[in-house]
Length: 546
Image (cartoon, rainbow, N blue to C red; front, side, top):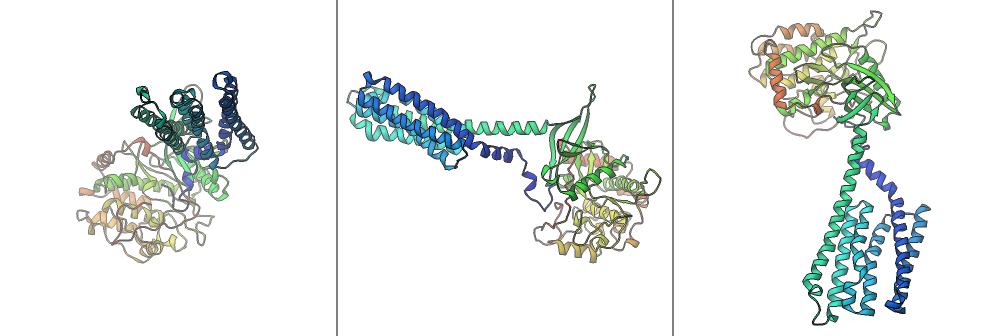
């Protein structure tokens, strides 16, 4: 999910924006190419007009040669100016008007010197549709429609106002109004056909950009479809393909180039890779590689085919109680491993995840539960985890001591897990508020109602488990993740995690329609927190966006 801070950054490198920027940059060169084509076409037409002196007569021949000569001078000068760096967007509209009106000018000469029947059959009319089609090179639907509309209007005016009054009574049927209206309609339709061609050119170019980006080869990683994108990074399904025909499906998280120069974010990204490389547990997304390829920093991770807890809650709603207990036990195992992780020398690292929330919980099609996104995880010892005015993570899932800037330990992760379990059980986020101040006050000052108040079938022991995680005082909170594992496994009745918890979770995943495009969500952690206001209403909003 994109964070609140940079609402547009994530789209800066979209195919549409990339192509629009490229078309804008190339507009002078394309206009210069068109000007060169018209220049040589006008010169050839002028020469042809002068060569027809015996057949057309001196005046008309000189008129055609002179008119096309002026056109050649204009486009020749314009081409030089465009190549020298001069360009204005309005020049395209003017040039289309000139190009579309050139056949009308030649028509007027034929009408004046040879009469209406000659003018209606003269060769210059054949070039009208070509002039309209030429506008497709500008890659603009509006310009194409403008060209077709202008040609149709000119054709109708020339016939009904200037030509028809002079037609003899016995003129052939193709000179009658119905046939001319067909011509007018075809010219008008040519504009829309050219608009379709221009649109197809743009769409093909966009598709080519997507194909290049999504089939990009980052060394040994061939990127496939994009799974998610945020303001800071994007995640792709990729094929790890070294030598010898070996292939493995992975997820590649790549940071956007415009944030690669941000030392703070780059430090977070490096730390995520460093911490991830220390972890190897069935309930933790496995980190495989970290590197830089052509200026792009990336992390290669285990690909989880399924969905995030957030996506499932939005589609399938709250979980069955046995599935909640199973989910709790699996995540508690992951946190117990994380919190107990030691260095190579056997010294405890004291790791805290600090970002436990639904988007970072991945559930596979096989019912495996994985903890992801270690972008802001840090060791408690030897570092300042919270700076004044800077709060990292999802504020609605933060422990009171974190929000108050007090020292904290691994129990902060347990509070976040309690908020998430409350949401999974009730469908309501207990810490929701209309703004940052209200959210903080609700977390720091309020005691949370037991889940059974909102869902009557919740048994007393599951109530106690969740309330124990949500204690405001860390000293009264569930002491550690190992204790939580034991509490979850001891649940009985409708909330017993075994034997039905995993199968209930799988059925819930099937209802949510898990697909490979939802398998791995990008970690879009921002270096600083900026609250995103939620709509005002009565009571907490169900299943809010994070």
